[in-house]
Length: 134
Image 1 (cartoon, rainbow, N blue to C red):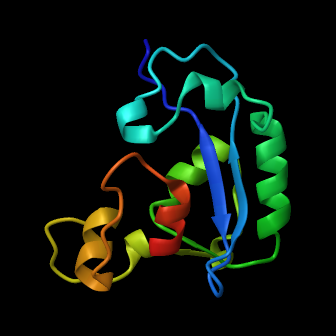
Image 2 (image 1 turned 180 degrees about the vertical axis):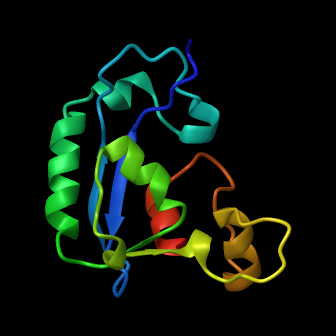
């Protein structure tokens, strides 16, 4: 139908130091009809480049990095779904589900602006920027 989303880039950042531990493009298993480049920043060239990993390799590397560690992120159910991972719930801190009070939006971009005074997602999407903000 052309409406399925897939993982195109994955980033893991150390919460204490904000150092990037993993940042790789992920080769799609299927033909991509639209990379949504203006939003995603993804191009066919990047996804087919020599540095791009298969979904299986990206999943294995992320699983090894997060094993036994607390993972902080925003709307992580989406990440777990595309990666095919199911970390233990006690090791997941999802900022989407914090008690933010009465708000019109729980979008990460809006929370970062309101709570951190940070402008994110102003151009093409960057998962490392999102990870740091979360």
